[in-house]
Length: 328
Image (cartoon, rainbow, N blue to C red; front, side, top):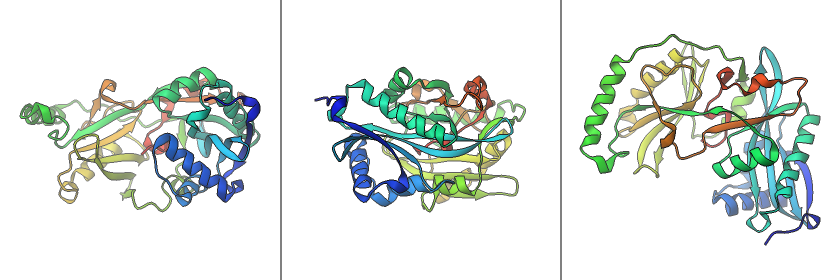
């Protein structure tokens, strides 16, 4: 069943303007469309812990019931030496009974972009799932920026290649040898487009979650978390979300430090960093995209051409990784 646009109403609200009932409805919408459980507290925490103290929510109503949403978190970015406001594209959800009418989805995006522009947000970016990625390009004018590649230090492949035992052990041995003899390329760390990695960003991205760990050294800082992957036979993975300042050598040092935690991590299987690197660290391998199940293409849209130009779609100019998105 697809409801007609005339039966629906559309409105943009800040997080601080949402009623208790509206937050509850948004939490329920996330569960019904994504099968992800959130509380009203965790939902609000995600959207209020940023430098503005709120995010922007385009809402689609049938009477007083929310049946669709498109949400953006404001972020401070450095763009060729100047500070601008970008918007991180997050949950875009439509109740299953209201899908099919493409203009509803497009109207959500359009009214949200109008409000964002009025609040001096000049660019939006996101990492949508595969289905939303196609729709966002066709209907909302989102354009590809680049791929987020997966880089790994494989401690053990036994849980990833179980059906190839014992060849997985031999393969893992040769990978370790390759990493030792691999040519070390020149370090590169010039990124004209990057988030402003201040306390406002950290509070908004990680706030008070015990999930994330901070590795602090004299010249750099890394953020990571430990996970047991249900998709890969309970493989134990350390996900590196961010290294700041990001450089090839700082990422290499981070991996070497995290390797030392193996005994504390109960048989660690793999360390993974997701990002867009110019050169691959000597102690990591790049995973071919065909082995990546999720959409790994991030995209964006210019809202204010007076501030942002076409250079923003050159992925080589970005310092971008998991910390820029909300899926890890």
